[in-house]
Length: 525
Image (cartoon, rainbow, N blue to C red; front, side):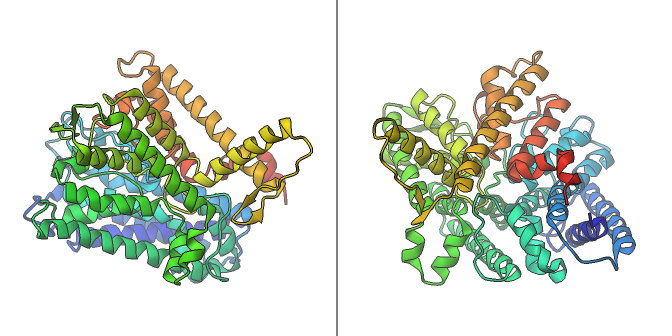
């Protein structure tokens, strides 16, 4: 095990994050920007500076003690680096929240005074889950200093494509081991390189990600220029960071519904949908290979699934007289409002974005069943979306269909194909094992949460089932006690650590973490 090289890369992580904190504390993105919307908070600036100094010291010491080692990144090193990047990265992201609440003389009772709550919020940010402990009484999101809100949204954006993958794009020091690292961090059963060289591949992904980010910021802000919303630059930036990463943490207690703007919501729809698509598809489109992109099996299944479910949800919702938004407004139902709210909730929950504009708990039972099904399935492999992933579900479906056919036509041998390629046994087994592992972890998570919340009024079984799915699937909101109108503040500290672990397992595709807990793995050469 090349520990020295692993910790040298972690040193770079701390140094980069500390640099961002110093820049924000200096006013470039933090305390002097958007003065018309927020007041300067000296404790927030102090928290950023102290956190930046701590990161600089940790990163500097790690760099000094690990420099000059062999630059070799094997599979073990890559697994360890990815896991530690998220675990330690979340602890560092949590630090400004914790310091702000404990440095502020006027804050007596706030979730951020607990490091457990801060870590939960930070892990939720880096894993693009979007579950929050803010928004309740005495903990309004809108009372948090804007520099900390930006840091919170930025954690989404950094985690979206993966801090480690971004490092591969920027830092050449990973050498030939970069491919191992890239394959581990990028979600999905078939990580497909876009170019022959891994650094160039990561750069392409980063450019696409940045392009979507800039386009979304401008389009959200354009709704205000046209008089269709009242969103400012700050909220446009923060909501874009959350949207393109399928995160969901908002700067407003009512999420997107705060603006009561159909135009703003319609702008969000395609970007949430795009964020759930394999980034390799965008590369093909940029290269003009639209026909090849359209013939991607997973993309077609994904779009058809979304279309069919939207029709189903809208059909069920037709009889509903009104819809209650997360801002508490009552909207009379008509065909446009039906499409507006049904499509937004459906795409947001399916991709794991987690933005909400309506309280969907009172919706008809069948519409909620479809939403939960989409939460399980998630977006495409190679995207920032959560869930099991469309391609895995499709492979399992084809395996079941093939075995069903074989039960009454035993002599038929029909090879299973994905993208016109025959699936080998390893691919089929991998999909089945992952789906089963996801479901087992989901069930175990719900059982542990239920046991820990036996004395809680809100911790009923449907709620903990939703919490387990929403954290393992990196979704954010679910139903009932963790629905669109609720938050996670009421959970016990032990439950929050379990859910933080579920977020990490879901973001790193389960086995990246589980294999580190296996002694046999570390004994193998």
